[in-house]
Length: 318
Ligand code: ZN
Image (tube, rainbow, N blue to C red; front, side):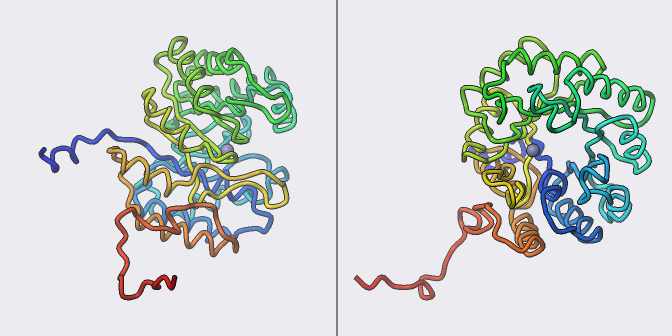
């Protein structure tokens, strides 16, 4: 086998880093703006080319991300990456455009109860807000992505009907949005559920570009990624070190971990463009920033072929 050629032909997978948004937003202590920018620059330096950097939600709702505009203005390596931000409404969209994001991410929950808790609105009202965002974006040099929260289950309602996910995806499509993120907000996805949702979506909206956003709350994150890969998904969202989940909310845990995801993808023959060693160094830096151990595993064990000096290893004594 021509290994060099096999290397060149590896299918590409997009890894979108969401740690400085989905992860940092849950941190109780304000992370200085310059440090947020430093982490994003380091991720881009490691080869990450898609970053959901921050969120233009109300600074009162999420004080940790009140510096969204300033973070983006501080980035040194921004031209090397596609920078996205979450926007809840037309006002957020104007702010995001003012900061020059390449992609705005709108979000609606597939669960009416969760949408009410998360956005203080009905699904219909939230979709109307997305329509306003689409109007703001029209004719501007920015892409729109529609995210569906609780796409694989809701902590209040339990199972979420596939039809509820399809209805939101169709509403996005009707607004001209062709990038979709299926969010597993509280880690309720399982391989059979992921299969069901992706197959139904593929039949109904075959041209929609789908990204998967899993949380590893129940340890099934990477198993669900493999199911998505088998069904043709080539975009996954993850957070550095597995950051995320509020330390004061028992049971809330972070996204699929970026280094663990990159490791799995690269070892499975996919090309992420990311330098795993550099990524591990960013994860260790983020661990120091938040001041507690992060759940990432590859950041602790190292790459698969990490070699140890036998002379330095402890000898068993039994
Ligand atoms: Zn999330």
